[in-house]
Image (tube, rainbow, N blue to C red; front, side):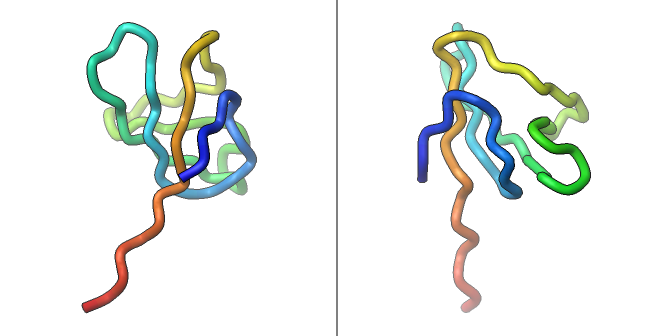
Length: 65
């Protein structure tokens, strides 16, 4: 996975590392529906990140069994 210090124009599942939090939050990016905006699984949308925060991803989907 690649570290992104700004919200990229990509689609996929990312880990959002927020300042002051112990563990990362999974977020979804959709470059077509909501460019440069991350959507949390709690329903919030965010189009900014503070200094020191970053995203890791996109995650590679698992292979079918």
